[in-house]
Image (cartoon, rainbow, N blue to C red; front, top):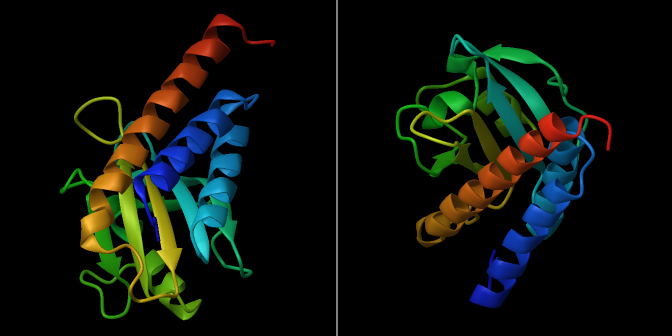
Length: 175
């Protein structure tokens, strides 16, 4: 996955740069998924955002190496989403997709595409997460527990970059 500290830091900077140079939140999320998918041997990178009521998530950014039933912009109940996996834990979580408990629609879809494991990372600016980043891989050894702190740092840096982008859009809506 991430062979050394220099590579990890370079990836963190690349993720921040992609967001900073994007013209909108939608573009930032799509580009971010592509960068992360390219950095790891992933079959899918996805960002889910949660609604104000905390009941539905929307696929805000999605990259997949296969055609899939779930499309960007699709809405799912929290219980059927990757977001639901981190809403209680509040930290990066590694998920085995085959035989996962509780089984969810998204886990079943990912497993059917050949994914074996994923990591789900909260994106937040305070206590409750506002979004979740999920990275999926067909490699059962992907995302080992000793790399979860890296994914926590990645989630934190992405969150702050997205917040700066949102403030920039408010300040200057027509760049």
